[in-house]
Length: 200
Ligand SMILES: C[S@@+](CC[C@H](N)C(=O)[O-])C[C@H]1O[C@@H](n2cnc3c(N)ncnc32)[C@H](O)[C@@H]1O
Image (cartoon, rainbow, N blue to C red; front, side, top):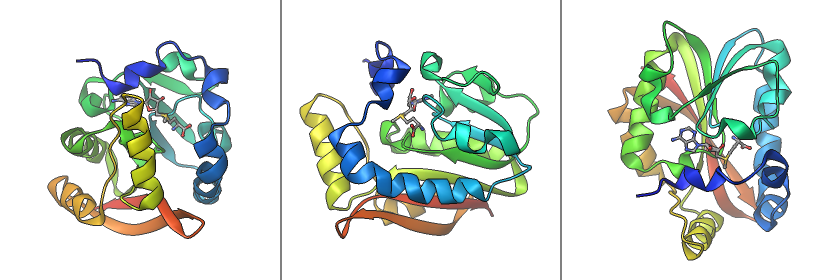
C-alpha cells in the first residue's frame, strides 16, 4: 500500500510552501508558538524530523548544530544543514553515535499511526541526551483537528490525530514523560498541540 508521505514525491518546495486555506486560517497560530520555542534553542545538537522545506529549520540552524531527516529530501531548500534521507520510524538505520539535546518535529506526526509514532519516539530516545527534550506537534481531537483529518480523508489521504490519553499511552510505552503540552487554537477551538517529552 502507498504510504501517505509519498504524496510529496511530485510536489516541489515552492508548491509546498504556497499558502492553503488551512495554513491561512490555522497554521499561523501554530507557527507563532513554534517560532517562540525555536528562538530559545541555542548552542545545541538538534535533530529535526520531517523538516520538509526547512521553513522552521532556517529559523534556528545558525545558532545550533542541526541534523535533519526527511523521506522527501527534494523539498529541502537549505544548503548549510546536514540532511539525511530516510524514514523517521527507522532512525537506528540512519544515525550512528550521535547524541542530541533537542529533537524537533513539526506537523509530521499526522503521517504516523500509533505504532509508527511509538517507533519514532523510541528511536529518538536512543539518541537523546540525559536531560534532552523532544518537541513534537500533533493534530489533536479538537474541532479543527477533526475537521482537518476528515478533510484529508475526503481527498483520500489518511492522517492521524491524537487525544491526550493516546499521547500519555504513547509516552509511557516509549519510556518518556510529557513535561508540557501547549494547545494550538484558533477562534477558540483546538487544532493541535505542541508536546514536550523528556527522558524519564
Ligand atoms: C506536513 S510536512 C511538514 C514539513 C515541515 N516540518 C513544516 O512544518 O513545514 C510533513 C513532512 O514529514 C515528512 N514525512 C512524513 N512521514 C515521514 C516519515 N515516515 N519519514 C520521514 N519523513 C516523513 C514528509 O516528507 C514532509 O516533508
